[in-house]
Each structure stands twice: as structure tokens, then as C-alpha cells.
Image 1 (spheres, one colour):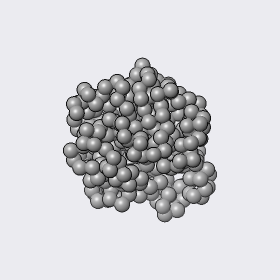
Image 2 (cartoon, helix red, strand yellow; image 1 turned 90 degrees about the vertical axis):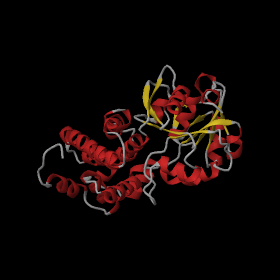
Image 3 (tube, rainbow, N blue to C red; image 1 turned 120 degrees about the horizontal axis):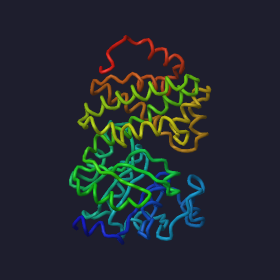
Image 4 (tube, helix red, strand yellow; image 1 turned 180 degrees about the vertical axis):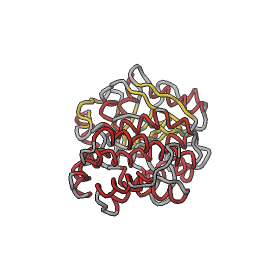
Length: 341
């Protein structure tokens, strides 16, 4: 099937994952009467979505468009879908793709809104996709500075769609964009994915910093030096440096580190208050992706020989129960060096 045919206005799109971000993407894709199906693992939750015509648990302010259908059966959700968006956490990506592989045709267009390295392998999402579905699948990553609540409400938003094939990125950008949602395209899949993976770790650090009362100077220093770490790792993995100055790099990092809609930032604030890690995650009520990402980023950085001191200290606080104040002291007592190093 040609790109033009698969991007026809009435082509059905399936969104797999009925959390806050998957629901927001389904709402956005269904706007302008575009046929969209939303699937999730929790059948009871899906029944509630179908009955209420909104996701009261995560996005109560965002009613579903008439063209959005909730479907509890994965095979039925994929039956007529020419385009599929996977919107699940990184630890669930491989298993879901294995199920998807049994129902999709070679003509299916795939995109993923998953952020983070796979914990057991250190693979980025596009590498997991290739391992499960093969390298010939035309795929794209959807990423950038977006909070689900604001997308669901239709507030003006810009983000990035990246694919190695520019035509595939452009096809998805056209499908998801409207007057209040603008998608920019990129061919730097690695850069866009690394930005999405590392920013969650740094956002925990920003939350800890603000929770300890360290102020605006500390916050901006953490963000600026965090961007250096993020860029350093991305370039080592094959990304383009300029990607990290765009929406999927600096944009997503700033958003996640500075606004309390960020689950990772709120998690850091809770740690600074002395809350136990498990209690903080339960209170947030959704996956805090930076928790697993802290471990994965640390392993990838060590394997590639990339120095990431802020991410290292976030790992120590989250996984080794280091004192947040001790972690800050470790960072501030490091040897002085030129800023460009």
C-alpha cells in the first residue's frame, strides 16, 4: 500500500494503551471525524470509558469525539486499522508488539509514543520494534513536550514525529495535526528517543531539587547541565546534536522538569519530603517512568562510557536510597572543569 493510500482521511487508526497519553492521542487522532479505535488491557476500565465517553480516571475534562470507538478485543481493534499507535510504557512494549505481530499486515503503518530504554536490554523503542517486527516495518516515533491533559483538552501543542523515512514521518504528522496541534518532522529517530528517555530521569532530579528548597538557580543549572548529559549520550548512540535543541530535546526536558503535571517531577518532590519510593509511586497512581529509566540510563551510559553525573545521582537516590541532600553534595563537590566538557 502506498503512503498516500494508507494516509487517506477515512483510514482507521488504532491506539493501543488507554492510559492518559494513549487516551489523549486517541482523542487527538479522532478529531475532525477521523475513525479511531482505543484499546487497553483493563477490560473493566475500557467498559467505563465506553459508558462515560471520557477517561474519568486520567482525563476527565476531555470528552471523546463521536469518531472514537473503545474496543476491548485487540484483534478487533486491529482488524480495520491501517495505522497503529502504541502508547504503553517501555517495559510493556515488547510483549504488546509480539501480540500486534499476529494481527497486522505488512501494509500496516506503525508509530509508538513509548519513551525509555528497555530495561533488560538497553534497547531504544525503535530497536525493540525492529527486533520483534523486523527492520522492514515503516515506523515512526511520536514524542516531544506534551502533557496528556492539555492535548485531550485541545490546547495548542507542538511535538515531533521522527522516522528514518521522511515520507513516513510526514504521513504521521499530517494524520495527527490540526489547527491546535502541530507536528514537526525529523529523521533523527535515535535523538528523539534518547530525549524522551533521559528527560524523565532529570525531571525526578528537578523535583528533588525544588522539594529541598534549592531555588531557581539550582533548577536551571540542573536543566542546563542535564541537557549536556542527554546530548552527550545521544551523540554517543548516533544521534544528531542539533536534535537536542528542539522540541524533543530541550523542549521536552524543560516541560517535564518545571511543571507539576509531570509525574516524574512530582515523584522527586515526594522523595524530597521524605516519602518512601513505593508510597510516592502509589500516591501518583500512574507509572513513573523515570524510576525504571534511571536504572536503564545508568547501564547504557556505563556501557557506552558516557559521563552522566546528574543521572547517576538520581539513580543513587531512587535505587540505592541515598539521601537527596547527599546526592546534591556529591554533584557540587565534583572537580571543576570547563563548561564545554
